[in-house]
Length: 110
Image 1 (cartoon, rainbow, N blue to C red):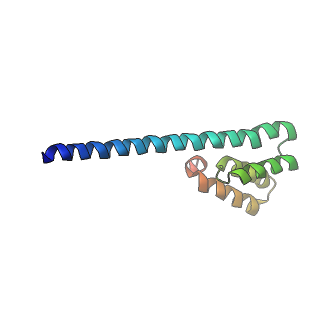
Image 2 (tube, rainbow, N blue to C red):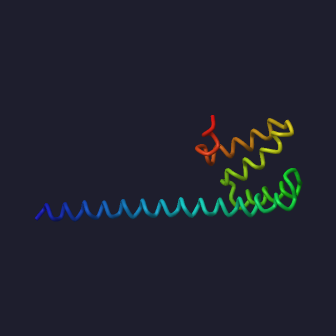
């Protein structure tokens, strides 16, 4: 009698755990898709139109970051021109944000 209740409880716990894992994975996929969308909309497409060092591109990146400040790609792209122009302190502060939000991506080459 107790063993069937214990088995039922174990099954229920495992089922809940697997459901949470699936939900967590789908949220990660959703966040990744959102980040890709924002990166395309606020960097990839505008850089083709405005050019790499333009004020319009900087404004576009800022707009994307105002929508979601956790998009590491946009922080890195905001830092890159500054670093190339020798504005190291400012550029590094933005690059630090990229590392904060996606350390695996931006630290993998170190």
